[in-house]
Length: 629
Image 1 (cartoon, helix red, strand yellow):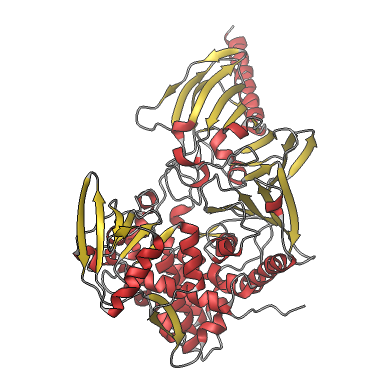
Image 2 (tube, rainbow, N blue to C red):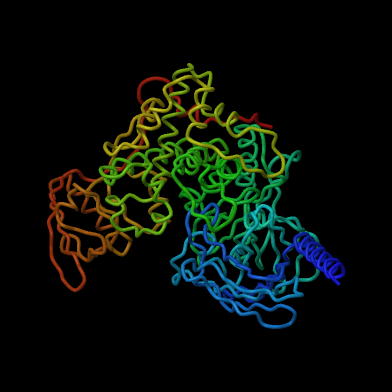
């Protein structure tokens, strides 16, 4: 009896091992029903290989590229678990609200999961990133991490997913996930890791177009377009040639590509929040409906955001700070090096925007001037460093826009760009133009290329690579610039680049385009505030006439020199101060009113760059590198 018992026990153990191995071999199946995307509702069904016993399921919390714990747990709905045809009870963890605990019964190797994702309208959402609204009656961006749970225990790189999606009738899609088959409105994808699935946003829509760009050889590149209107898909030959050039110039800059193909996903609608997120083999770009057909939008930030996200395929995806290379989506990110991840990408994005022709040299210089002007008015630098804004990024992404000049926001983008301009011009100066930041890019972001991979870096790795390009005291150079709590920011690169910042009473084309796009009246450089176009005060710069007059964010200007407020009257009144006229403003603060007179006589002031002394390194930085065909 004892021998028989032992033999039976061994068989049972063996069967459990075999069952466990088979469960691990099977991918998790994920089916997404997006047929109700026009009313901002997604349904998902999953089949997860499991073993009997306790199981913890996670809803993704820390999302790569978004640098924050903003997985939209409040928008998870309808969660139900079943096993062997019977309901399974679940309980949410009392401390980690993104964790769900259940117990899998004996003789069960598959857990069925059903859930819904409740998308928000543009005006009803506080979330940024992939969970921000991007579903309209005509198009949708589907981020897979919004519609899935995954089991605790394995790295997201090791967990395998087999996904499919069903679209509204007649819609088409584009994504970096390889397609296995398509039948009607249902598309099935090849098995990939959860890491790759979550990093491969899907764009779909009724008005859809995919345009090949770039060289005919090597990895394929596409503009993947979905728009609220058919006319919004119009792509001029000139603009297409600039995107062609962008692909070529990026190849010249980095020397190698770390992807099998690349898609610029472009959702174009006025009913979604406009921003962008990077992925390894694609980018999620959310743009105005008329982005391709209206020059004013492309003169604003929307043109350089595509090069910015493209650069992230190298800086942020292939090379990533060690604090952001995590085994799952639940562990907190350490964002200290975002001045490299985002700041260097911001700078290189501007460089590629110029080299590709998406910006002229004039617009590119205007862009640097606007950043420099913003930097001079960033008074929050008096108490917190650039590095601190990077460390605090998970919170700063969700900070209010008012009092931004006192608080500091995600300044590692623009101030980081100015810092890397400083680095680039210094390398050029020290090597008499023989080397530049381009050499650093080819060294640091090089490698074998091909399929996506991740290689972590540290601050010391950055310093070592810069020293390999040209020896210098790079460590104290960088430490000083990221830790300083005084001054106007890192503006030496402009001077060393052969230009200088001045102020004129005429606004630039780029300044006008940004005011138009953002619907603001930006008088920060003159009287010291930024208004929405209805007169509401968005921010006030400390120490300026507006600040000294007691004006604060949230107040509203309803009268200018005894007349009703308008953007034009506001600008004209500021301009008239140069000839001695007073500037009186009638302010509304909640249900109180008062009139203030600003002490100011400087007229309008708009930042621009003019040629300075020394070599024109800035123009050389913006010069295209690829040979014209």
